[in-house]
Image (spheres, rainbow, N blue to C red):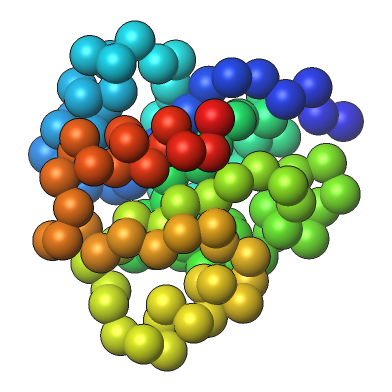
Length: 125
């Protein structure tokens, strides 16, 4: 069904500017990556090739990040992938919901630079 785990980072972010800002920093660090701009695309990419780490926005067109996270963590072959939620949603209940669904970390976009996000990614690689 899915391939073995790889060393790439999957960045799931629909905002063009934020996605490119983060990808630029990931490229500078010479880390392999792929992108998805919505939840269904992310799930398809994960099914085809399991990433080492997933950066996941919550507010996405079609399938939102909560649903993507839930589906990842319910599958035996993807449940152990570290997922770092990077979102502008910062309410306590949203953060708790993500952590209960299995997110490894929750970063509020406004509080972290792309460099700090890449440092967080390296903690899980």
